[in-house]
Image (cartoon, rainbow, N blue to C red; front, side):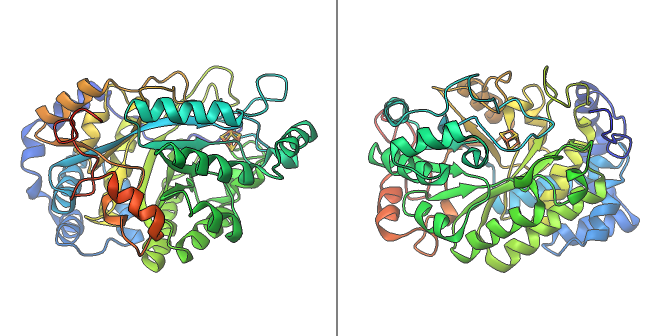
Length: 426
Ligand code: SF4
């Protein structure tokens, strides 16, 4: 994607290993020494005060010598809200259909009719749910292309023979089927209507839609979202607003490194913050790094700079404060994900013992035992959560029948019981 403007995106920073050494130095340990405007912003954020858009833009311009101050503040804020507990979920990744009417520049998920099955059959989905439940998975993560029924008659006709008029209808039915196997659906449908979301919330304790970026500029010719009707930011915000009105615990986040500027990143964070200030339903923010792959339109586009990733994660923590759950996907950062703990993350996403990450098939999940021992060496405890976070397990967010099932699956803190406590069931 030659026309993508990557000059405005990233500074060229140090290699991860070099930066890791810098972070363990005296500078990091004496982070309280930040002074001037930077010191004022960090002190205010550390005391639970607000960080403005202008503050966030100033933080985005920090150089490598100053970034450790930012990381130190972000870590301290995370510790205040989350203590020394990091979380993950054990999931089964269900790519219900990989047909899609969009054409994102970074996509490897989508294929055309004839290149693979039109969709997974109900028997295949139920088989995955059963196997996942046997392996102790608690999340049936549905990921699909967007509205292929509007683009491919062959898909629409096959879906109709199954008895469904839309991908949403099929997802709702498969979520209910999964729940009957005692595994909780978490659906990433894309744009959705109020009626669809009302139906999803009967079986999904939480759902998700990445904002990715608030900038409509990315829809222009030569940009990452050109030719993607479902990536119009105001439509994505509308779906999330309806979810807020319905109080559905919601996962969203940013996709970093797809041609956006720092200003657009910060504006994306503040768009999500405004939504969450109004409805309080955003349970988790994923800060996902673009990952170049062979065969995609953006194949030759560089990944986001490591230092920039640390900064946007830490700025997210400062903007959203101590209570937000901030996630970095460890399989997309296999060498460096522990360093993001120093930038304020408290969640390491989904890990599957059964299925690959179909969106990033080149990126294997980390081995759980290894991840646990790394986290413990850093002085943290790794706990398993459901797709819905403990603080959202409440009748304000989840309807009573489903809430009963959710509560039966967690301990008194809202986490999946540990192996010892569950006699090896999990
Ligand atoms: S990234 Fe998602 S929305 Fe974009 S083309 Fe691929 S499947 Fe479709």
